[in-house]
Structures are given as C-alpha cells and as structure tokens.
Image (cartoon, rainbow, N blue to C red; front, side, top):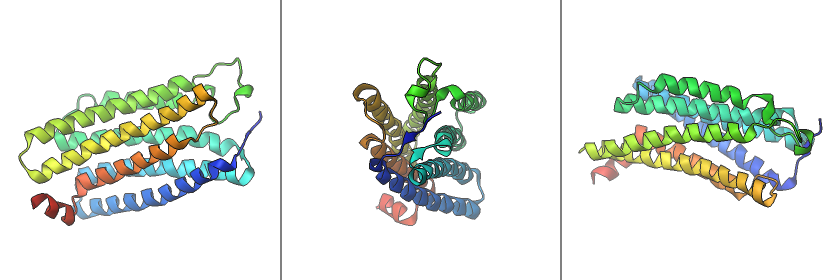
Length: 249
C-alpha cells in the first residue's frame, strides 16, 4: 500500500488546527469549571459536547503532525479522520441531551438517536472507507466513503435542525429576555454547525468536480463556523454578566 505525499500548501492548515486545538481546550476547561461551580446537568452535558469536539480537532492535528513530520499521510492520519468524525457524532448526542434537558423535549427519540449514532460510528471505521488511501490503491474495489460521510452529515443535520426548531419555538414562548437571548444564541450556534458541514461539502465537491487535492479554503471557513458555534453554545448557557447587563439595558 502506498502513501500520499504531504504538500507544503497544507502546512497552514496544520497550524490552523493547532491553534484551534488550544482554543477548544481553553473553552472546554472553562465550561468544566462552570459545571463544577453550578453542579447541575446542563453545563455537564455541554462539557461533554466540548470535550468531544476538542478531541476531534486534537486528533486531526495529530494526524496532520504525522504527515508534516514524515512527509506522507500515513496510518495515524488515516485513523484520525474516522476518529474525528466519531467524536462529532458523540458531540451531537450530548448536545441533543443538553437541549432536551433544558427544553424538556425530545426524550422519546434520544435512545433511537444514540443507537443510530453508534451504527454510523461503526460504518465510519469500516476498512472500505479507505480514509487517506491513494485512489489507485483501491481502484475497482468496494468504496463506501461517500455513503458513510453522507450518513454523518444527515445524522448531524437532523440533530442541528431539531435543536434549531426547538430553540426557535422556545424564543416565541418566553417573555424573559435572558432566556430568549440564550435560546437565540443556541439557534445561531446550530446554524453555524449546519454551515460547518456545508463548507466540508463544498470541499468535497471541489475534489470531485474540479480535481482539487483537498484542504481548500472551504475547510478553513468550516472551522471558523465550528469555533463560532462553540462560542455561541458557551454564551447561551453561561450568560456572563456583561452579556446579561447588555440584554437588560
């Protein structure tokens, strides 16, 4: 089996991931401390969500580190892709649990969502995805990467749209300004996550339609939306004093 050579044009992406890893760790620690302070379920669920997102970014950084050091996309890189996608699914599940607890809704579909999510994770780790493997090595062989990636996107979109709809309904049902703003921030966070995956779809289309080698500008923009979603989710729960004062004015 051969390896795809690492290209210097991807080096800024590695540095970008490295910076995002640090930022995600800082925000995760802040959320954990908020849970230690309050000792209630919502910040705990959101802490788990942040942990899984942070693990996804960190593992992607480690995978690219191997490519930077060795000059090739090798085994660690290949493992980092399905691992990161699996962490995104786990983050989706805990995020849904967080919103379900806050709004007292969606409890009936939580267990089915968990089961479907675990099935998608198994599919992502199947060898026929050929993560990071040069196309010539599996030419003419079974390739399920398109379907597993599509399963990940559909699964995540279902959860984000459900949360966005719930948040929107909650905004219209409450007269409390602070609660309204928290739900509004959560709604925008879900829109950011939807755009996150949309940018990755754009990168995939660049590869499929224009023979682009990958890691296009769409990937950079995608992670900007992810960090924006991070911040919005954090603010929707924590509601720092400066934001509360701004709302009440």
